[in-house]
Length: 363
Picture 1 (spheres, helix red, strand yellow):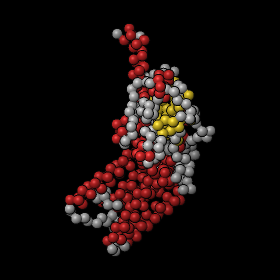
Picture 2 (tube, helix red, strand yellow):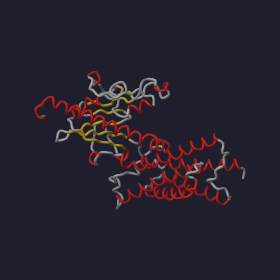
Picture 3 (spheres, rainbow, N blue to C red):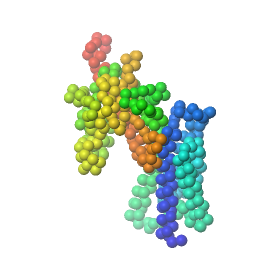
Picture 4 (cartoon, rainbow, N blue to C red):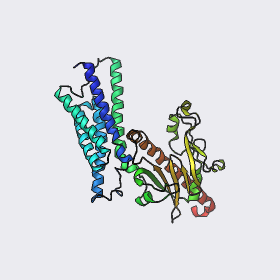
């Protein structure tokens, strides 16, 4: 077979496997993969069912992705590509059966297509991980190093994002908090389609609220990694003080994510979230971001909870793959830092106020 045809077939097979790997992200987005297993009451062994489903989903996504990258030409992964794809296909079969839904037929059909393509390639002598040799000129060496770096980094990122997902999906929260009603909740909601993060702050809700109320690009920033936000050309600067002029918000107002005309207006003139509920010092709801709630505790401390809707029973496969791989882990990293930033500022201000009110107690 002509070298160019072999190369095109190899690329087509590699792309199919990579896309099929990412398509498995639809399982958590449709609420099929869920941990902790509070929703799997229909199974006689919910924990075992969850562990098998979660392990199979994770292995299918990572192994198929790594195998597909190897078939596409990564010399680091190519020697292991066939074993990775075989392992990924077996895990995919288990995940699709254990988390059965009508859409599982599509996944099984693609599994079968990939198996058929591999068998046909082997029988015809077309090795699917064939990589055309390149001249050893400097420019080719530079391109090869760049490609290998990107390929390995992508596989590592997908592996980390998949492994951390069960932990960061409900970071810092209890099962009771995941099921409790919050302001802005829909009449019908399902924790299987939500992200929820929580943190305890050693200050009252009244002391925490001013920091939360003034978030926004044109206000106090987001108390997260503002240097990273600026690296992506967003003009965000975190504030370390409460400003009275930033405290007055209301339903219908806009919280900016970036400056107007970000990246030349590529994503529209104004990026951000519309406030749909504003109830000091209890709750704020930002459309398309989620619900921010301050829960008072009996000991005088505060629970800061942030709940975000994620996917749904009809979540598109392409959107699930894109969101899972590009959005969820970075979102968690930035939101966790924001919650820690609010905690640090509120607790510092609370300690300062306590010292000023009762100076003798601190000597």
